[in-house]
Image (cartoon, rainbow, N blue to C red; front, side, top):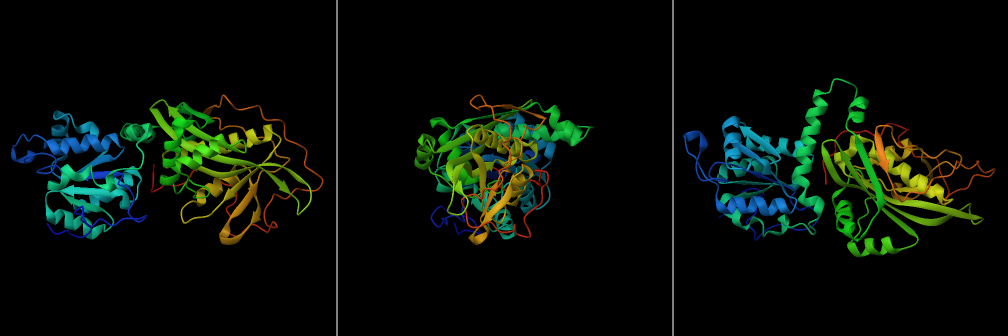
Length: 414
């Protein structure tokens, strides 16, 4: 069978960073997931190969969605009778173009179209989706039994968070419904969630998820660095580094591990003169699923308090990308100011020496059993200390002013 548009045949798949692992597989229903047409009075049963692919990919953290031409109530009822309804995160059933359904699915889940795949028995439908979205990988229904073996459906690691991904997205759907029904202010809704943030040292069981976060998280990422398992293990064992993971829960359930902070204990100096202790935040990243929960300020504040408790000045690196500007806003809103700049826009920010340690947001309960008590803010030095960096220059004109950490939803969610 000849490929249509971006259709993959299994032998000519492009590789490289432009073809990331599939995060969502979008299914047609009639004659693809099951054998027959529900609206024509059939009572079709699913193809064994299709149910095997559904469950195998679900175990790896690949989400499933539906884009099918049918009556929504009829299709949903049949999925429920088959016991398959809960395996799907988004259902787009109707009569419009399937390319529109695929786009809405990506927007609902919050991912890029380059991480979406589509399977359909009809070559015309595949061609329509491929023409509208060339980055979407399209597969014929007869290839379903081979999908789980293709490289694009095999993430490097399968973590506990990945296995729970579908349940967490369904929990997020319940949160969205609750937010839409809430009659009060956004602040009151946040307070009603019962958010609990746990911040702790990363252990051996956290390394695969920490690596996954560095690879999958682009927008809420201060430097864009990625770390392999060996690197992370060495950093966790290093006395000069602190690797923290953050986990979040609320009354709707567990978000899983949603944040990573990696800092280095080092020195700073004024020119070539006196040196003093510092802790430099080399990487801070958050899952985009928690962008509006106030987790950014809470995690940054914890890092600041931990550094101050050891008598170190908190510093932070920021490396701009096309999509991570919101993290500079988070750092600025938490109290950091630009103290140095070098090539390609790389910034070094410092926490003001005389500023008091930040407090966690009031709507969120912070659990950090290993955190020492931060001291009171030190008095400002007579001669301000410049961090170890190129000579401080004026902040760039487009550096954002202090602003709330909330921002529009991101495209790439881990």
